[in-house]
Length: 70
Image (tube, rainbow, N blue to C red; front, side):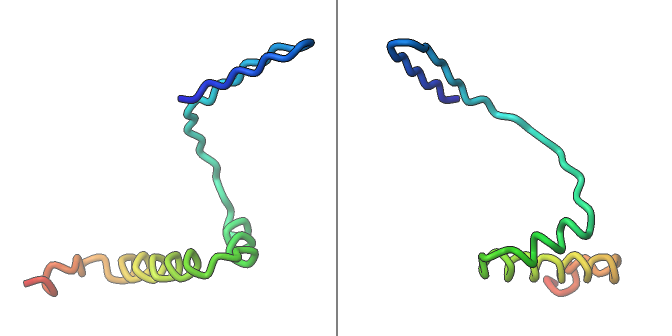
């Protein structure tokens, strides 16, 4: 936690940074627009690979990758 104090002639200010956990629901449109506007190729590649793994898990729930490790 960071505390910043600024004292000037006419005003006194105290700022404190606190951790906050926030949940925000996103629609498919929100996610699509974020992906369209994203300018980070590495993030897009990572998210694309992750999305494919998630889709594979939904399409083949019995394949837990255990057999491929045996």
